[in-house]
Length: 202
Image: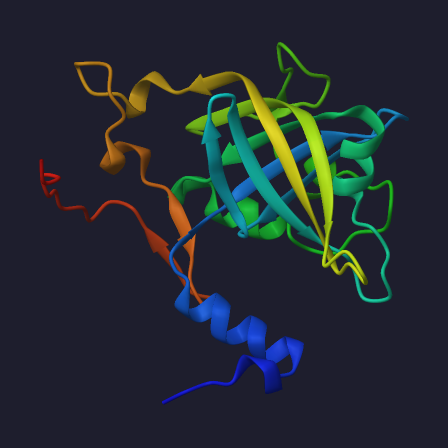
């Protein structure tokens, strides 16, 4: 089978990409508006892009009609965000926070998701997640530049909260204890509990 992506409709291209580039880690992003309203939303076009400086990238699409999502609005207003990783135990709450809500309505309150204060940024963080990265905005890049339908948010990590329960006795992260969920195609997800090791060649 061959797919000519130059001939595919955007929705078809998305479906093929989202069902093949898997599993995708999920950035559960919390922000705060300039008026003090919290927001929480998941994004699966997400990755580490640099370790020096430590930088994460989250792709935030625009809504139909070009309206900006609250996550992007808030990040541009305040320059701050928290990126949480989603464990299997938080999967249902993460999914609930993906629902469309009117501008200015907090997913924390609407979905009954507990939060706690961050230390370096104003945005709250989700309580009970295995990992949370407090970040400052580095830049936002619209893409494609001619007629953007998404914005790449580059965020520098300032402080990480890592649950002691996911660490080994040697102080390393145990992927089975971390038990993250990753996005597959459609409504399918994967867990990180099944792992194997290979030594890199010298």
